[in-house]
Length: 420
Ligand code: GDP
Ligand code: IMO
Ligand code: MG
Figure (spheres, rainbow, N blue to C red):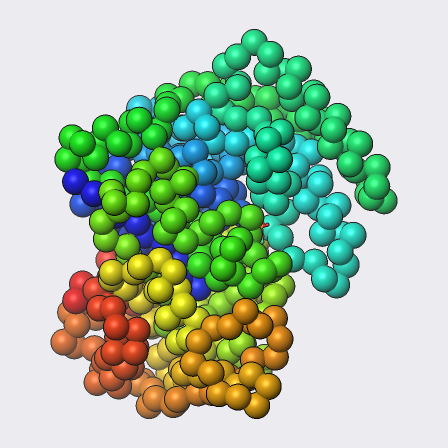
């Protein structure tokens, strides 16, 4: 059996959490492979709305095993809060949530370094979620990091103190006030809690599952345009969010990857700084934000909104080898007289049809217009009943991207999902 990968094709928040929860009953295992609590994955069912940050979105399906893979970075304080919130909903994860020994720890001082670095950048800040993601991955690649496997070893506290002291030295270069004490106390409580879960060598476990014929879905965080290599650098996150990240973030060989399920919104959003060619800084953007409730699930920040960007979507499909598409938030487009899709860009007076290296320079979008629809589509559950105008839009995107759209999401709830 192969491992399927589900990931975001834009700047994150495409609705990965909702869709993983919808698909989870088909799978034995759901595994996160990169990112950390910068992610906010929202699930809704039975009028419950829940946001997950570190924990895979399979947790509300009791039969499913959930794995936090080696590519993930974990903040014990946020992890503990997530576990407590799930306990309040009577979700006990001690039996079906496993954590990789190789996953790296976000230290309290990583969070401070993130905040200090962003403050020092002023106007050029990345717009980080301030969860310590960048500094933690820096320590991982710099070979200084602390891993989950370390917490059960006797020298852990000393390692913690030594890395924290190193960070204190780095912080001297910033004019930044901080207090580690309170967070540190909770952090060590979180470490104790992590010890009550099964800490595993996830690469062995996952490959054994594949051998046994179990079905595994790898759940991406962030989105392709935030990838450290291929995103709009430096306005990116610090991990590989593309499909290849599932190989390194879980220890799964490329020939074990099956379907690559790419999720995109019917329009685009971005939270944080950086280029966004189709951004609408006008009333239409406001309408998208309002109708789509476009406020960050992790930080609450308003998300920037714009029309669908086809060259960027094609770029994401190429990098990930997407085999099937899922479109979300189509209901948000209801009511617009005209819907636009960016088909090309103008760069220095030249028309181009691909996302170039120069994304940080002024790319002027060229739009194609589509007739909108007025019918409420949020209660439709069969494809045939969708308005003709919306089907035209879907057919156009499918033909352009050359990958079939298999699922259409028309609302935040589990049930608001159309299988084509
Ligand atoms: P993720 O990070 O990719 O999991 O996405 P987020 O949870 O950060 O953001 C997606 C938001 O849109 C959440 O509030 C979801 O509840 C909501 N959502 C997901 N799918 C749909 C949809 O099809 N229609 C609408 N209106 N909302 C949706
Ligand atoms: P999910 O998984 C949207 C953005 C931040 C910032 C940049 C770097 O919910 O889709 P970081 O904290 O990683 O150093 O921030 O990346 N960002 C996200 N935007 N959704 C996310 O995750 C994001 N995770 C990080 O806003 O611009
Ligand atoms: Mg999100």
